[in-house]
Length: 289
Image 1 (tube, rainbow, N blue to C red):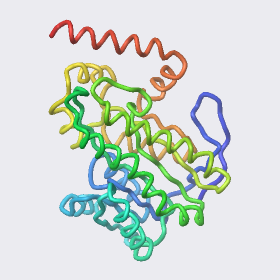
Image 2 (cartoon, rainbow, N blue to C red):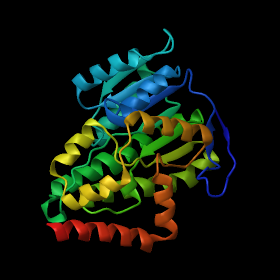
Image 3 (tube, rainbow, N blue to C red):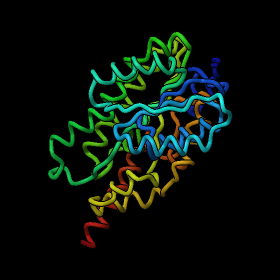
Image 4 (tube, rainbow, N blue to C red):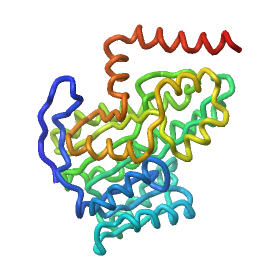
């Protein structure tokens, strides 16, 4: 399924593994009932993959499965779902064990579960911070822990979904950003550990994306946060899913859809300028208020 790639300076391509094809491969998508996860499930269904999606709500899983069925490439594909609360480590181990037994071990694991509830720091409760860490950082940890033996056996691939605010701390996202930075750190550390074991891994950092979760995110967003988001633009989940698949095919460790790669490089090499621009935008909003 995979082969070694070559490092190309400045392109973000990795010398981890590349996905050569998706047809017939078993793909587990955590958070696959909506948004980027669902768009990825639909795209992989059209590429001939066997796709198993995980999420909490059965009604959303059933609706997502109908959409996947409409995109299937052949009648022999297996498209299924399983209910899972990824914040519960014991449940992850149990459900993933059952999935391996009944659906078959994964060739690809995509961790896409997530949500953002931006607000001013003093308005964010410890409970919300705790849930953010469990959903994003602990969730990725638990699924990888449960499935790594099978992924290693099959020379598989992992994609963890972080965010632009997973490398760029942003006004209003203190809990979300902290948890997504943790996902970035986890993925970077695993990259070195998994490379000699022939398991590929990527980090996907999408910008604002037009998903049901984004609609909820906007309900209580501070005006400073909204202004910063407007300058970055808005992508469709299908665009992000397409970038994810292309990134895996090219063996890219860092997958940045749209203008994200440019933002990432700017934050890395001229962080003072990025901070200056963001601070100016915040002051502009606060001055109007």
